[in-house]
Amino acid sequence: MKQVKNHEYKMCTLNDVGVLKRGVSKHRPRNDERLFDGDYPFIQTGDVKSAKWKIREYSQTYNEFGLSQSRLWKKGTLCITIAANIAETAILDIDACFPDSVLGFKANEDLCNFYYIEYMLRNFKNKLVLSASQTAQKNINLGTFERAKFPLPDKETQDKIVSKIIPFDLKIESNEKEMAILEEYSELLFHKWFVEPDENGKLFEDTVGEITTSDFCYKVSDGTHETPKPVEEGYHLVTSKHIANGKLNTSSAYFISKSDYIEVNKRSQVKQWDILFSMIGSVGEVYLEANPSPQYAIKNLGLFKMNGDKEKAIKLYYYLKYPYFQKTLRFRLSGSIQSFVPLQFLRNIKLPRKFDNNNDSDKVLFESLGLIVDKLYCLRKENEILEETRDLLIKKLIK
Image: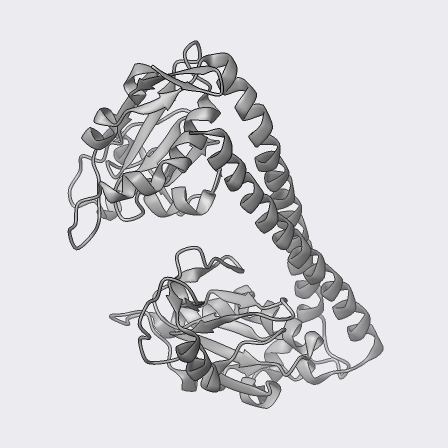
């Protein structure tokens, strides 16, 4: 027994307070195309990590054959990753399948608060990562979690602790939903502008290529080609893998020294209203930097320098995300052994002539889009503060 703030704690395994099992993916090879493109969401470790709290989005689905060699886990299952992304946790908000690189936990609600367990695992993540095998790809296994013992207070105390933490996650979730609505609306506004004839009555297909990104941007460059040495504290080095769905996530980016940061930024300093473009791996991910004073360096990323021109930045940002351009990009990449685009390609992206228009109706539209972009930036900053406060609270309340 352990006394903490007059509450009685017991050392328990997860199986003492629920059922912990490994995901199922029996068929080999795992990427057999016969498994996919059906009605059953298939969750992988990357989906768990990107979800942060509730899992609603997924990149693949199983069909009936895929389901037959897996298992459909119910909404409310706690997912825990044990390979690639280690000890990441998130809660299924849908029924879904997942492979044996993910564990599923169902709580006994008479013994524990389900959300307390999720917060507790977040708090113990670093200790669990230290248990990972020191192999080329870090991993832990089901046995690691079956043996691990965690200090659990009584159920009433768990409920009280959760009641103090969960409002932060609910507010973050509310902000995420608002952002999704704003993003969808902004894309509809851009689509309407893009497909309408220009002031000369011409459709965009008729004028694509009359100007290029080199004409339109102040400068088109890319990040460092070197690999600066990681340090414990300093400035984040951002790469293609840190951009997804229009967002920049530096949580897994390592730090570089101030001297390396200055040296890298001689070539490719990111400023407000510049645009980042992933050039390798998940090619075509785009991020618009709305922060007035960004402080990170970049590697393996294209950089469209806009010289502070917000309207032009918004035009190009939405175009680079637009299905017309993304389809062109996918066609260019087809048949490539490795997904990659060179800097020369970024400098010669063809744009329609209407990008150079400065009529009053365009200004009104892009002022509206600018307000949406500003709101999205404020919501993201608010969520960063909420997440930081929540994490500090978890560390304080869960021992």
